[in-house]
Length: 141
Picture 1 (tube, rainbow, N blue to C red):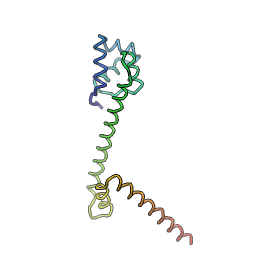
Picture 2 (tube, rainbow, N blue to C red):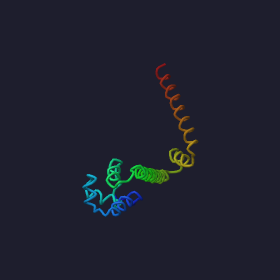
Picture 3 (tube, helix red, strand yellow):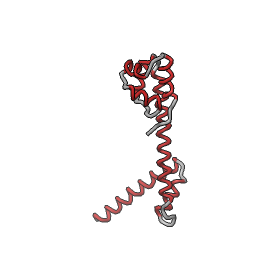
Picture 4 (cartoon, helix red, strand yellow):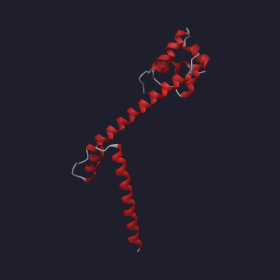
């Protein structure tokens, strides 16, 4: 899956070109394969932290800003993935018939704030535990 190039991807290529190095030269100095460097520069992959550090050291730059940029980008990508997943789940839930208890509950949950959802979850769990305990006591007694 191709990713969108980030400032990190461009920074690797820009610094390499600034030094007048080819990708094979950077590969030799960093110990990272030339094809992987090509993928990084194109934005086809986001490198792991240890790869970023090796590239930065080979290119003579402080790795910390690059590591922070990569983490920030990954955080944003993960948030976008979570949002897409929730959107898909909500669309699937909206397909449930509105006249069923489950359909009504799903629609209600979509309208809740995080605090309301936390409160509802806590209270539902407590109610279910009490209900299960009562049912178990009735069956035993």
